[in-house]
Amino acid sequence: MTTTLERAAGPNALAATDPRELIPAWAFDLLTHDFRKKHHTSHAYTERVIGQMLVFLMAAGQIRRQARKDPAAYVRIVLTRPVDEAWHEALQRTEVYLRIGLAFAGSVIHHRPVMDDDIRSGAALARTIPYLKATGLYVDPEFWDDESGSSCCPPECNDMGGKVATRSWDGLVPEGPLTIRL
Figure 1 (spheres, one colour):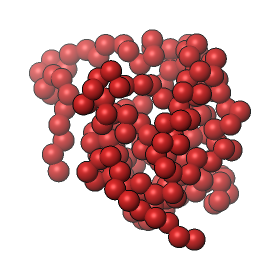
Figure 2 (figure 1 turned 90 degrees about the vertical axis):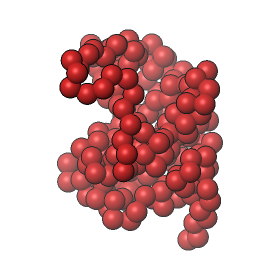
Figure 3 (figure 1 turned 135 degrees about the vertical axis):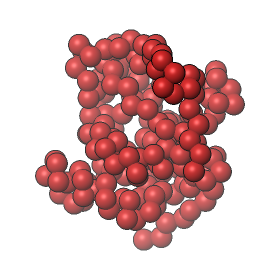
Figure 4 (figure 1 turned 60 degrees about the vertical axis):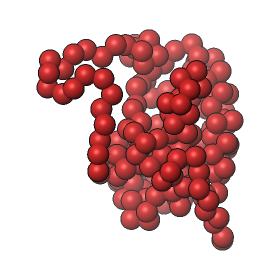
């Protein structure tokens, strides 16, 4: 199999038809190992779901980069339950996850669990698919088709679509957006 790499929108982000090529092989292997250990899935399934998580994060990162230039360009995209399970595992590998966010979005890509009418109706997922495809990466239909209305979050965890205002850290950290310098 041949994979073609080319520069994407971000200065350090790469786009490839195979999402496994987006991050170093050791990092991909670490994420698949973590997922398999907890979910007891086949190696093939695990590689595919981790790949789809990377497709989602690339799309989210592209939206974030564009929204920093033009706030009106922001659009909320959502993921399906199986892909969200992979995201939850990746969040626990901070040394890998932080670098994924920096590479794809230039910042951390936050996870705000929510269930609302936009997700339940399927509109959010229908809006998401074109953004996934726009990455140029393989979008695996097994993880996106017939999955509308799913969320990692039951209805009682609704936080108004992730728009709950954060509160003060009382001087422990600077207010406003944080910058991480490597």
